[in-house]
Image (cartoon, rainbow, N blue to C red; front, side, top):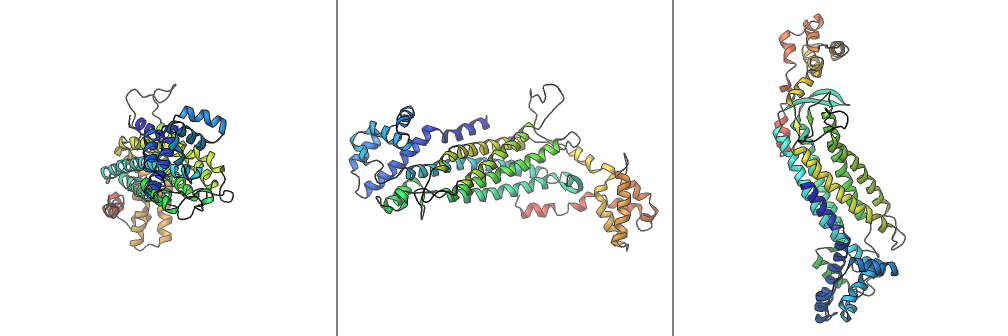
Length: 431
């Protein structure tokens, strides 16, 4: 239910109704500023506020003839306002309205994204705290390495999401600008004071220098921030997918009552949500590339960016909103199997404790090279044999027993030694 609500809320920001209402908000803010400066009669402003209405269907009809959406919008407003409409759009060019309205839409979209990012972060924080001491094997190259905890794995994600919050805040700051500077941006028929006053009404800052458009490096940064967040969501999703594999089964997505995994195989519990997120991340990244292609425009303005943005900005904000909401649901309901984590740690008789044995032999006076060779031989004997047991191999190797007692060998297989600084990591990360 939450996922459906957030997607509908985000989608509404990009509807034609919302677009033209934001155009009207911009036009009225300019008139307010001009009225404050004595450039527009107060009665005209009041009349426009009272009568300014638009109809999307009518705008479409006009646009079919004039081939210009802002002119079609202004014509429809004039039809409803009458004489006072001559004060609307005074000194502006179309991009003043379009780009300033776009900034407002992006800000509204960003508020939803920030809310979902906070929800997702809180979900991961909850799992990190819950499983702070849930021991599992760490993996490098997909191969068993040394013990960690599941909470530690989640703590890494928490910090990554917190960095994304900083990035998103910076991206929001970058796109929170508007312009009311007229054709090619030189304020030829409008005052910089009008721009400053109007944008203050709208909660935006003026771009210090703009041409006929807001420069698209700003939007490129915004889109690349969304792409980075999407990439991390994919990273988390890929990890969950690996942990859900039948031969691992250390954690899995929630499987709801009545859910079915396969049309042919009734036993299947597939990681469909995280696979979905992995796929959608590719779309957001591709859209970020399109945003960077929009940076290089001709001279003071062309509109090659406009058609692209009508797709990538709504799609990417809607997608990322959905992805974060869906992953938050997965994390909140994540099923964790500590007993399977312990079982997997003991594959081949605890080969993951090889470094502890190596260091213990070095501590007893054996050279590092000889220690490594001795430990590796026993590990490989376990690895290459079904049911092989590294611990028992060590205890049966006279070369090892010359330096270590059975008790000393056993002490090397205590995961606590690897986890002694987990509390420190959590404290440093304030989790």
